Image 1: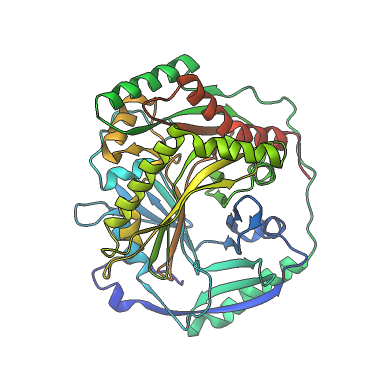
Image 2: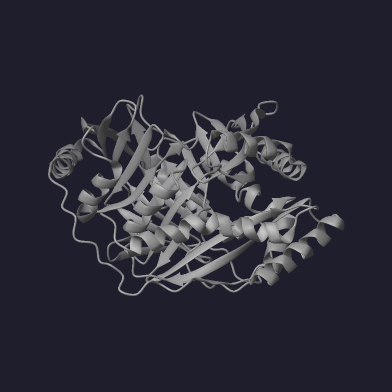
Amino acid sequence: MVFQTILSADDVERASQLHVISSSIPADLETPVSAYLKLKKHGAKCLLESVESGTIVGRYSFIGMRPEFRIIVTREQVEIKNGKTAMAIPLTAEKSALSIIKSLLQQVKLTGVHDQPRLLGGAVGFISYDFVRCFEKIPDLLPDDLNLPLAMFHMIDTLLVFDHVRRKIDILCLTDASGEKEAEDKMNRIKATLLGPLSLPSPELCQVPSAEPVSDLTPDQFCQAVDDVKRHIKAGDVYQQVISRRLRGTTSADPFLVYRSLRMLNPSPYMYFLDFDDVVLIGSSPEAMVRLENRIATIRPIAGTRPRGTNEDEDRTLSEELLADEKERAEHVMLVDLGRNDLGRCCEVGSVKVTDFMMVERFSHVMHLTSNVTGKLNPGLDQFDLFQATFPAGTVTGAPKIRAMQLIEEMEKSKRGPYAGAVGYFSLSGDSDWCINIRNITMKGQNYYLQAGAGIVADSVPDNEFAETESKMAALKKAIEIAEGGLR
């Protein structure tokens, strides 16, 4: 076992000394999707991909193989499951969920790691929006319709890394000296599977198209919520507030077909497929929550939206209109300031900077105003401190953040669950990368859930804000429709 499940006070002193062994094959005949399909029977459980700025493919894609165990965080405990074996660690004032995960990762010390991607194994998964109650006092009023854990992680020690610059696939295994033979055998089995043919079963067509999903808020109810928020803004409670609505539907579509459909419809900087058996998360998020690389923290706020035009002239006109929209600009500036404040809580004084400001970034179906905020993490702090300082993102709550979260609990219909939380990883390298879990489909059995919000400011038009939520969920609904029709 690469990871132990003993979380005692002397974990760090007894940490395992591990190193990475790797094997490579050319990537010219393989894609992350085809590789995942080939390796699914061998335990592939998560796929992370990236398309940057709408058209440029991110350098790395990752496939996590047969996790050693799974971490499940509830309100009461952190459960560590390895097959049929499980251990529960109660949460206390002294032992938080993040500190337990940190202790687990600290059992592994990597040696001889040079020129490797950020993700070298570690905890890969999702953290629900409601996880914020682990470290902030937020009212707990809404029902939990999804009934999912606060967080779920796969603990990964074997990875496929697609390097799209060098056009190769690296198979990475973490091991100690005594386990090298076993790790090499594992890599050889993976390599043989990748070099073999891809056999696709005939897609099962849904005999009856699924019914239109049901919203938890009618258009009138949502518009009334927008008016209520505007009254809070006028009273000085908040400057900006995000209100969301959820759609629930049923489908017999295969989850990975849904992912394939979504990645074609809406390629984004953060695309992910996380399989936890009972629940699957599928997403194409445009927005980073926070990234840590070589102790440089980055937040990339997105606020301000227009649809893409049908040609370059329309795109240019819509971009100019977006940049000239005072409502969109005001909302964006508030969220950039909130990002600076979040980084200021954990970064060195004077290091927090806005490196890009109010740039129009084009994606497949929409364009957004984006900015980039960076800072150097304070000595003595780590990826877990950074996550806590920045979660949840201000772009899905509003500002000021705490008051906005209090109003969310009063105005929405149910707990958000994975929506507006985060998807990403805590790497054994000490780096991390988290996106905001938006443009997401949560599949639980044959039920699926979509959710989208709108940022409300003083001059918001309720009907326009409702239309924005419809637009944000359109590609998600279309992806399910395509998958139900079968995809080869």
